[in-house]
Length: 508
Ligand code: TXA
Ligand code: MG
Image (tube, rainbow, N blue to C red; front, side, top):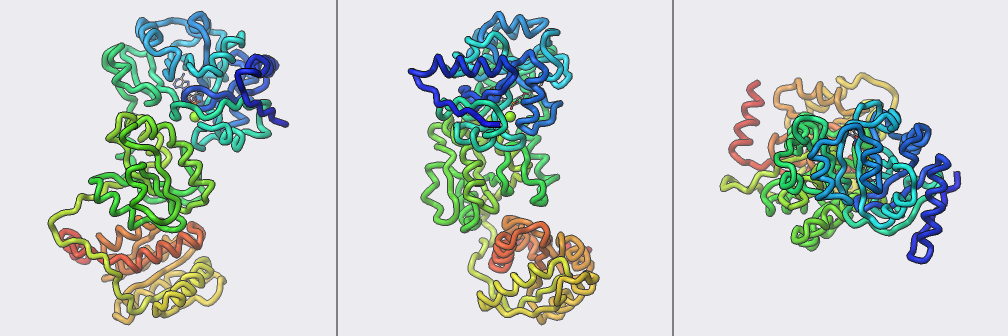
């Protein structure tokens, strides 16, 4: 399908809106700017239009859409019963970035609500959205105009990137002012419940309707707790989490100086760093993007999605971000960032009075290297790297990509490390898992399966890991070599509590 891209100006506004309304009424889809993010609109009363929306986004059809309206009369049209709280919130925040979940009227198709008896309704304030909805005789169902799982779109270029060829028309109204989606509040229960933090802070809602509870599924504290359970990075196959850039994203939280220090250690040519204007000067390598300034926290919301997309454009292999919880927009921004991170949230401890972490490069005396057939190609790259760096190594096989029994090679390598002939070892197979399991059965071996540099660094600092395991099918070569470099260059911290734990590990 050819997509009409219409840049809207004061002169052509009437004609553009006319054309867009015509397309919506004939069952087509039109992307348009709102004050939060771009929306992907279709006739909200036409089940076929919502089917088209799900198809264009690649979104599961049980994830309901928001109905966008122009007038209060339309609110009556699409809902069955309006609690007093709805009137108060509408009066305070509409038009604006607030979505209310209410009981749905029969005229709202099940395809819009994903079969739910409730409907999400919002009256946007962006002048282009207002003009479109005023001219349109039906409510407009509109999710964010991005491919499912990708960051929402805040610039017309992003909408074009995701939707060109998939929908009839894109109205280019420039960058949107807010940058994160509307706040969603459910008013169908006894008390209002926050379903998504967004353009209107919870505290502002509470000033109008009293206490608003937070749905546990969207509580940032729960998203962080969840982190501990799924901190192991996922395979690249699971590229697109919610709002997610292609590269794995990890959020570092804690004492400002400690976080900056850690971020500086993690920066690298293929690494993305998400920081604030105030800290830009701290970094010199890779793709360093500012999400805004803490002095004007609305800038963090404004730039977040564009930054996440920029990392994709730059093709970074991993991303590390500061934590922005401590800002006025923290709840909304961190909700997106935590989802984009798929829960990868790490607390960086404040520097303690204990033995400081020494950072000079550790002497790499002799590195043992081994793989099975599935890890053979990566082993060749690792050896090339060690040769380039002038690091002595022993290649313990295998010698081709033909299938072999990986425990045989894991044993050869652990023998070399335990005997003291080699100081550290690197084991590779398809996923790295079989190798690490085998190696860890040997007393004195502390094998760490690493899929990112952060883990490689932590496992050296805290666990004094002596064998690095990597999966050829999980990692690109560039990232694998960076993990290796981090592993080899990071010394054990020597901090007493970590030393004690390593001793305890050895007693198990
Ligand atoms: O700012 C916004 O709200 C943007 C712009 C375009 O208006 N729209 C937007 O739509 O973010 P979307 O589809 O990306 O997100 C809508 C969210 C989804 O998480 C969906 O599950 C939830 O609203 N939702 C919709 N109807 C609901 C309902 N009846 N009950 C609970 N949640 C609902
Ligand atoms: Mg969305």
